[in-house]
Length: 567
Image (tube, rainbow, N blue to C red):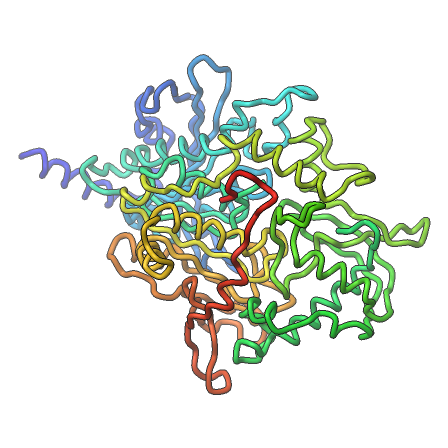
């Protein structure tokens, strides 16, 4: 029997193997790549665990549909030569009969490098072995900020590079070969490699496109954290909530359909003036609340009942936020959220002792300055006294400079990924309240201009869309649906879409999305590929993706606060 027939027979035997017989520590040990498969990496065979999981039910997720799955839960660790580290990786391996020659790498969120139990099932249900890593931080429950500082002022630089891109890359390279060995797949047989993540997980996805492009066939990237309020007036949160709700009501029908969803925040910016809200009354009952700050974590507060009328000062604060960060000379340093997004990051907190509303510093933003820039072992700033807009711009420059080669993922040259035949589905909630929607458009344009410098706008866009598509999700919040706009859809089947694009050449003209809550729950909708924008004609009956230059221009920014280009 020749080698080809032997390999075919071996593969057939593997696919006939049951999950229970395949999911053993002995088989996992036999399936580990050889030591040195990655230069300097040695595997700890004694660390292997393997447990079969049956009838694991997953429902009400936003990144994948409801499913019940069976899989082998595998973990093992490895070390780097000359280091005393130990990196734990985990893989969910589908039952051999369900494996479809796919591997999925997953990322984390906030300062966590992985979200395995929440993300990996989304690969298993599509026949993919799904991997995650602890980054060498000590356990799957240990976050990057827990081990970032060795002492005050002393950065644990190996952990920075592991969090930045190295750990995900290694988990993918190891996982792809381990998957082939586990399922007895010939090295001549293609195992398609994918990545999925949102927020910090989105940043991690672009870290791979930019620094390990040869390893991936398809990337599903949501709201990437590509880069890492005026204290003179502190309006109560109910006033800001009123401003948001009135903005949604006014801008909802501008897309041609009245459904409680702002699908065209660009038209909202062009046609709606927030000063029209001044004088409208608001009321909020007393409550305990939890809000998301900067896409990196929740903060809790107890608030008394609030009532009053929207003030000119309150609208001015809201407008200042929408306008984005400028330095003292009026030069743009960064952008903000689209109109219709909540103002969670500007929320004030109630001091029950003084009976006044005061500044509430978002934990992640405060920690970024305190820990990662000032290098103090603290998880927030105690005060913003003495801070100016120029201070914030200075912090942005400091962060870009210090972490340019590690945490920053703004490299616009994706040639290696493109030449490998890779495809990208990049999506961002139109009403993301944590990471500005426009940041994704700005990076997309940076890639377009870098990859196709000699082409016109339309020609370069057409060329880029052949392998990299960006979709804005109407009404969606940060990596999630939006309770303020419940009828908005969410792209829940991205893995199915991108696998068809990569493996069968079926290019998505629009992106499939599903309404996951509200009165239209379960309805299917399609998302337009940027720069086309959604519009409903004939009283909301006929959906179209239109080219609107004035709307496109609202997303174009000149970051003149910096001398270097901001990609």
